[in-house]
Length: 140
Image (cartoon, rainbow, N blue to C red; front, side):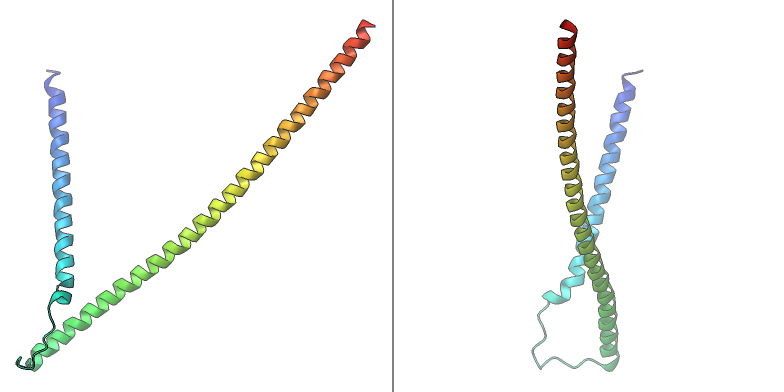
């Protein structure tokens, strides 16, 4: 009975990993499709021929509406990205300044530690001298 239980746990973990991988793959595929569709208009060659029939007014208005909608959405996204970049830059500057402050603090603690060690050695040397002097007085 104990032998089947670890096998079930391993099977469950494998199924969970497979499900997670499938979900990740699906999301990546969706992102890829979105990006392809989003920039597909950049890949299309521009209509340079004058032989193309003019669009009817309703189709042209629809195209203009779609273009303005895309520009508004893209403008909002670009503004968000620019805000994020500026926030990240300020965070980088803050982290750099904090790193320098921590380095200064560590240097100060190292100097303090060295001074404490020197003081301790001096005190130990003085106590040793006093002890020798006291032993010399006792022996005489």
